[in-house]
Amino acid sequence: MQPVPPQRDWARPPDITPNAAVNDLPRRTRRLRNPGASNELMPSTAARSPVRIAVRAGALLLLVLLLGGCLLPPAPKTDAGQDVFNLYVLVLALAAIVFVGVEGFIVYAILRYRRQPGDDTLPEQHHGNTKVEILWTAIPSVLVLVLFVMSVITLSSVEARSDEPGVIINVEGRQWTWVFTYPDGTEITGPSGDEVELVVPVGEPVRLVLDSADVNHAFFVPEFLLKRDLIDMGENAQPNEIEFTVTEAGSFAGQCAEFCGVGHADMVFVVNAMPREEYDPYMAAIAAGEPPPAPPGSEECGTTIELEAVEGQRFDTDVIEAPAGEDFCIELTNNDTVDHDVGIEETDFNGDDIGPGESITYLIPAMEAGDYTFYCTLHPTTMVGDLAVNE
Image (cartoon, rainbow, N blue to C red; front, side, top):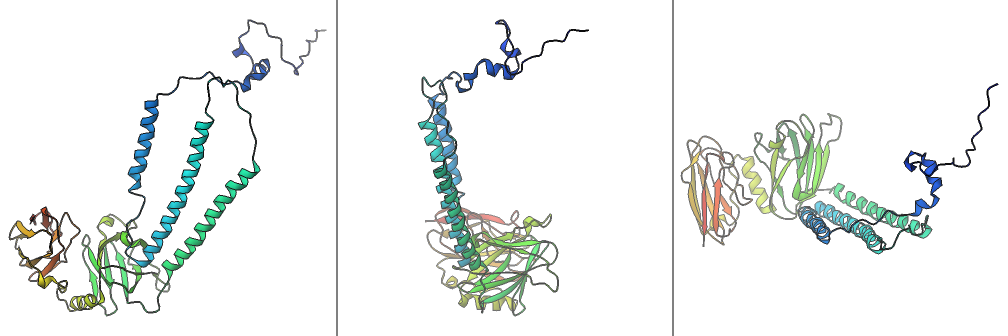
């Protein structure tokens, strides 16, 4: 009979000769040979250069400061937008408190409990802390509850509808332009790439009924802090609506905020908000097919610059002058065969378009002394000139 090999006792490690390499042993055996090794720390490494630490901290701080300019949205120009802005500030403030608190504890732990010379073993290890766990559960719960309540209040304000809005305008989005239809049937539209004008009164509720003629679009004006989709709901469904009250007069750029095809970038418009006493004659002129009246006070301009658009898509001059520090006017006469307007590149001014044979007077707000560029926004490459604003 073959001799039976001796049975190994697995409850204890095998005998190892002193010359055996530790790395050749099973992991379990290595642990048993030095049971206290789990509490030992690796030798200290060389300290990091203070200069490197300062550079990294400074770079992080600089990044935070640069991003700080992007933290807040533009100042709202509507009542509902103000509510959205307030909610945004609240969320930002609470997020900042959480960030500072968490990062503060992390930095404190790093500095207070960092490894000191002579620390060769791990400190006492603790498992769980009921008070701390209750605290870090209660604080986020309270924050979420506050944000929930404030979000519901803000949403109710944004979705509120007045019984008698100042004007109800049907807004239709189509690839790739806008059609604004007023209660009297007046329709304002334009070719793709043109800033179609939406005229609204200031200080009165404006309700927009939104619909799409093809794909999904979105009505968005950054300074209103409001956005709403235009979707073809069909004949039997209620279209989307949005209501707001513009709080100050001015022109505000808008655009489609839903990718709608290759011409999406050309789907732009401008909201022209004005007091009711200006709004009524302005809309009456558009309904009659006449040029809109000049802004009040334009007939009292101290300086009026006469500018003519002539055949061949060019201005009759490429240099004009205006006084600094006071309003002035540009009287544009269109003697060409296509539409023209006047814009000033270094400012937000963009005048209304006029057709062949028409004329219009633009009121230009006071400008600082310097050199500017005026141009036709419809033909910016061929119709351009220098505007010198002098003291």
